[in-house]
Image 1 (tube, rainbow, N blue to C red):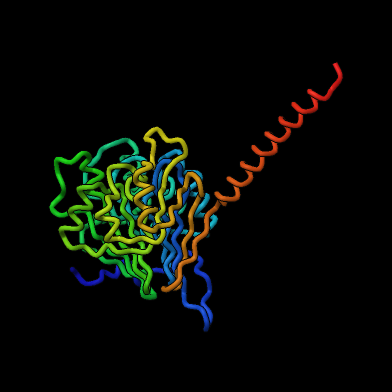
Image 2: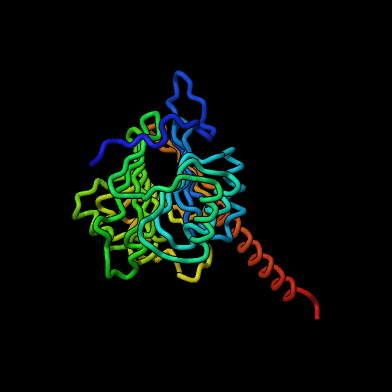
Length: 314
């Protein structure tokens, strides 16, 4: 594997990392942003470098930009596109135009479309350098954090159910004893390729492939990853019926805590290189408890009303 490519060294960090004290190590933060039916994840390295992996659909552009502004990000040090489907690149033109970026890494499998053309125009107008996201590239994020590209497969996978998905960029984020694995929309054939290549995919946090669809996250692959936390980026009541119940069961059976942006909102995970801290924008269990309480109250009210009617004189 090639030596670390220090693409981001020397660039000023745009994020706001938590200040480290003598008793506290610098922290890595990853926000799995709720962009509906799509993917977008913001990495803030311990040294303050900011990396956006994917940009959700066009419909989420305003929400994505608002989130990045709320994190005081700008310009991003790196934008990485896992593949060229609209639900992963649709919001990036707005991000480039308003937040800015120092470098863009492009997925290599062709897939034309108007939103793709719009993104390339935005990159050209902002004079953002464009590089291919190629297998084996390593990016130094400072303070001991690195991002390694375990895919796209080389040579590319062909003849699959979806070659664009199958050739997704797969990235592993390392910081101390913490690893995050970002799977894009990789499919079963991609997982098989990774296994055959002997790729080191073990990770404590897994960004689940393809919104938790039935076309990936095989038991054989999950047994190698062994995630403690699995994040599914997915839209509520989506037309694809993501995530597949069988996929969620495999993740939970393997011991992973499953979080979903449709139910939990944006999921934020921080690490000091050892321990993980996880929080969600919405407290799903609190919401479920409130719903159950409301249902019970309604049932009791209905029962009481029925009893009063039987007690009332004719």
